[in-house]
Length: 338
Image: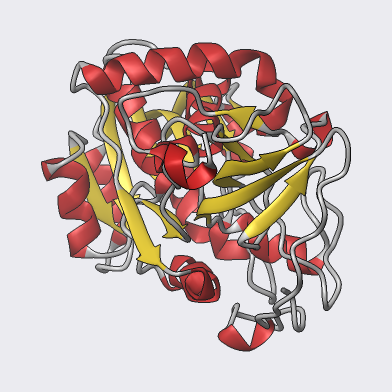
């Protein structure tokens, strides 16, 4: 749970582990045993001033977050025992739900992929990449797409989707290891390390024909540098701004004027407003995975007590791919009494 709101960078001191009895299951409810929990940069915002549909957390509150779990007790016929679901479980090893819309609880269904993919490539992470790129970025074959935060969960998927769309894709990341992963494992055409010095020139060299789509997960000076390279009618997808989540003065964009000069467009989005697209996104991306055209990378830590560490890793740039924490393994039918 939240011990204290972060002042500056997220630290282990912002969290506290508390034990409490598992609640009784009321009529219409079901009890979920957590298997995996998702970790995302926006969680820091929950602790400060809220984000999206989430209200700000106060000390003593359970941290908001999505997870995958198994129903182990149910008094709701729509959610029988044994069902694997993903939804708003929060940072806890058991959660009660009634399946109402505010919990956004969905059965995972039978699939030939790990359950954790419901938090990553086939969950809100993947859906953010899908709707951000295709609905807002609207890439056209042959265009140049630049993805910042490209080694993270959303960025690594967005870049691959741009390749599937027939684009030339350049990823921006912060270590040589991450850049190698982008080009050698995920099929990006080039990767630029923004920490390696002379970033602006390196990005210019990688985008000789300019930039048609920016899929931005970072904001700040990285976005500013990319804006200097946009073409006429470019689209800038504002998905995240991890460089600006930590307290302190925000970076004022010096190149914002290039949006108007180039008749370009910059747009943010809230992924839950695209719920009508989730089924299509899941089906298409599952097919691309089976065809070998879309790969996912997960950075998995084991143990519920490592959730704070996992969130700190994101802001330290230590994750490779989608950060998740494995809490437990699913129970067998025999263990569930089925």
